[in-house]
Amino acid sequence: MFFSKLLGLFGKDMAMDLGTANTLIYIKGKGVVLNEPSVVAIQRDSGKTIAVGHAAKEYLGRANPTILASRPLKDGVIADFDLTRLMIKEFIHKVRSAAGVVKPRMLIGVPSGVTQVEKRAVIESAEQAGAREIYLIEEPMAAAIGAGLPVDRPRGCMIVDIGGGTTEVAVISLFSTAYSESVRVAGDEGNEAIMRYIQRKYQMLVGENSAENVKIQIGSAYPLDEHLTMDISGKDLVNGIPRTVTLTDDEVREAMAEPVSVIVESVRRAFEKTPPELAADVAEEGLTLAGGGALIRGLDKLIQEEMHIKVRIAEDPLTCVVMGAGLALHDIREFRRVFIN
Image (cartoon, rainbow, N blue to C red; front, top):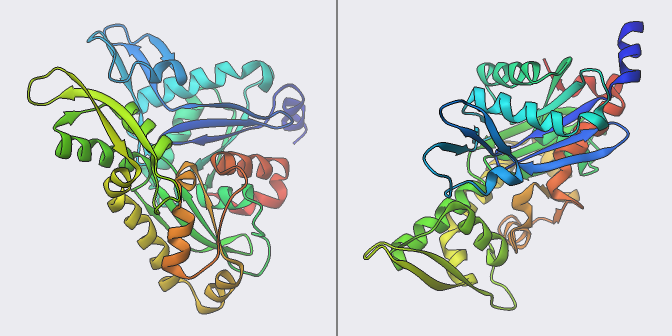
């Protein structure tokens, strides 16, 4: 115990939201010190890391054959162990001065549906990247804590955390999860749906980064008061030459209809499977949206109209998971009960 406290003087506890789209790091006493895309670029022949995060994302779809630019996580879990280890190591190195000189103790958010094999992959990646001790916490629990929901009270509260690879729906009461489901449909599926729509309607190929930008700029789940348009460039499928088309918010909403409906259906399913008393609590208090997907225009209105329930968006939905994990780090004795064994 004394040795652990001594190490704490020279190293800061660290929370990590290891997301499919973005990785965020919180350091005790410093706040969120890193928020970068979960992308790594390496030299194919030597395996040397060229870039991670924002710099590596620029390589996606643009790198020459000697460079591999990749997202090592898919659907919220590790798809490429080696690249994930490299990425975590580089991110920790970036914040090393803020974390202190000693290997950090880390709390990492993982999807609620994570398997034992996937848990082990996350732990081993963090160990090999330089962590001293590793704890895991389910992302919906961390998001609920970060969103300020009363997870300690004997009342049900619902969190819907829409990330890049997964949508997490959970009903929480008394530090425990009464119901949870991890649906592997989220922001990435929205990007892919836009790419397919443009290919089908305009016979034009666009990249993932371009599709994501369309989603951010004019994407919506509910009709908007003011119509939005955006020009997007890509490659014509017929003759292979560059081409530009103008998309409307109506078209993007149509393109994203399927993944959005899956998210809404997951919320409906949660109500069906939640015990009556807890469901009544949620009906009274409403549900909270977190994660990058919460920023899709009109998603809160759509869920409110479909479910006939109050819906609020967390104050800072993008950082809810890492902030919740960070708050748990501040009082490990109190929150240890929500850590995954």
